Length: 168
Image (tube, rainbow, N blue to C red):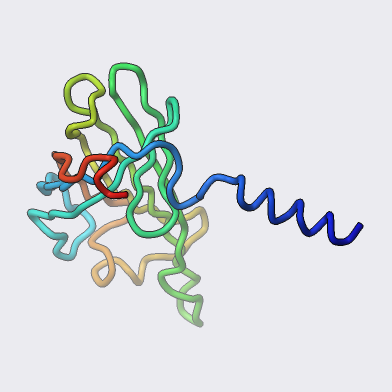
C-alpha cells in the first residue's frame, strides 16, 4: 500500500505542468523601453533594454523572466494585460517612526504585433509604489522616494529574436 502511494506521487509530479514554463512558447523577445514618467526619484534606466520570453495558454499570457512567470490575460485581437503586486518593508519601526511598508504594483498593457501574431509587441510598462494603510513612510521621502505614491513608466516595444521552437 505504501509503495503504491509513493508511485502515485511520482506519477502526478511527472504529469504536472512546469510552473516556470507554462503554456506554449511564443519565443524570446528583445525589448526596448523609453522612460515616460519617473516621479519616484532616483535614476531609472533610460533607455532600458532586456530580453523576455512569452508563452500562451488559451487566453492567458505569461511573462517569463527569471523566477515564476507573471500571468495575464490575452484577447483574440492580441491585446494583453499583466499585473503583479508585492509589499516590502522599506524601514522598520523605531522610536521616532512607524514601519514603512510599500506595495509595488507592476503592470504591462499592450498589444501583440499584427493583431495577435507574436512577432513583436508594444505597450506601457508601469511600476507604481504606494504606502500600505497605516504605514509611516515620512522618513523615506527625500531619501528612498521623492514622493509616495509615485510611479515609473516606460513605453515599450519588442521584437521576437528567437522563435518558439528554436530554443529547444
